[in-house]
Picture 1 (cartoon, protein in one colour):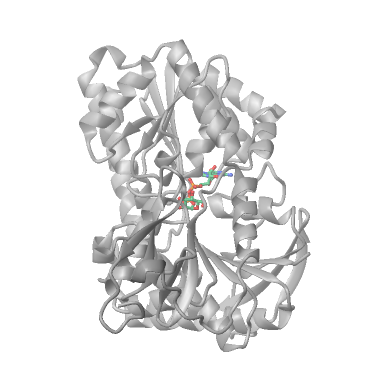
Picture 2: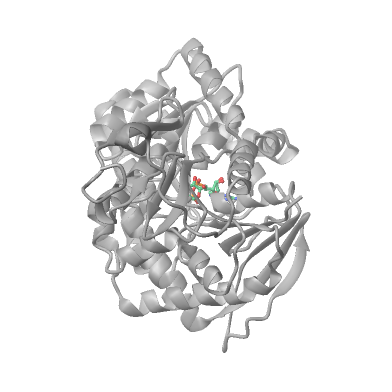
Length: 500
Ligand code: GDG
């Protein structure tokens, strides 16, 4: 069987399964690699004075990891710069926060080249290479330049922006062209696939081939939807652990007859924390009889603390929390508890279970695994209610949640009220449907579907002639999201095209 080589920016498998670092990607990849032979390649998280390119190999909780160190300049330009100062905000629709700095782009290309040069000698014929996320868009291009012809797939964990936004990026065309060095490109939802398709067809004169692939820049790729899921088995084990139960008891005692609402995420502007606090404030303002009866706990460990936009946000959140607590608190009670630290996953499971409402309201999110974790941690006989932003990829699947527009404080307040007063029978019905979906589309389904689709590609070969549909029409395909598959569209061939 082929080996699977997973490549991502950071390589950080959890040391112990209960003790994972924050970040959905690490959790999902570690689960995938326990099942396949192969290794996980990427940055160690360390910086050195000069770049050595030395690859270090180790084994962490049944996963073989191979890492390289980066230079300080790489870290600033590639990681803090282009990846998290340019691409992350742009791909989360925040062009107001996007830094367009040429040196960042140069650092980004340099690090992708360094990754490729360190990885290429480790690749054997037959290996499947699976690249993750926005830090590494041009990695396949660099590997192809070094003569690697293996199948290479790419999975984007975050949204793909609408063309109107992407075209604000100075080198947008080069970025999309580099995608065509992959054989397979996966997105979390149909919405992100459509946005990609829209750029390729509209800006790059691309087309769909009859067998459901996309052609542009003289190259062809498969583009598909693979919604990421939870490692449900491991997570439900964690939720039943002693630590989870102790945390549950502690939280239940702390809430002391109050209903607890919980939010858990990395401290990131895409997660809508300010809007959530404003929505909660509105809820307290509109519902005086709920004051003193509801406690909102927000767990938000620091992430990317060196990027300026993150530091600014921190100050605003502290001010907002202070305002709500002084307005609606009492001598012995504060309605908002904002905790800026990392908890163990088993502790989080206990916190989720103790909360009557899981408030997951990002402004834009590729998928959002917290929504799925909240559901998986609930008591089947007395489950809490998930309030979920319509702008999370997860909302495409989790339609039985209370779906909300996080930009509207009124809607947020109403959704909270509805969730907190929902009858048990309705909570159980909704939870059962949600849990069935969480189980059906778990991390294994995601991983196996991607690896199967990648194995079915051929790697780089000569670009074949565009197939022409019968009757002189060229086949163009679009995604049918009700059926989860591509459906055929047709358009007239243009003058000069075969079949015109
Ligand atoms: C990206 C995409 C996509 C949070 N706080 C703590 C902690 N966490 C864990 C959660 C969850 C993970 O971090 C967050 O995953 P998300 O999916 O919600 O979000 P991102 O980190 O932005 O992940 C996202 C994901 O990739 C996967 O494709 O869903 O859309 O943005 O697992 O539990 N974990 C621990 N302590 C904390 O305090 N241990």
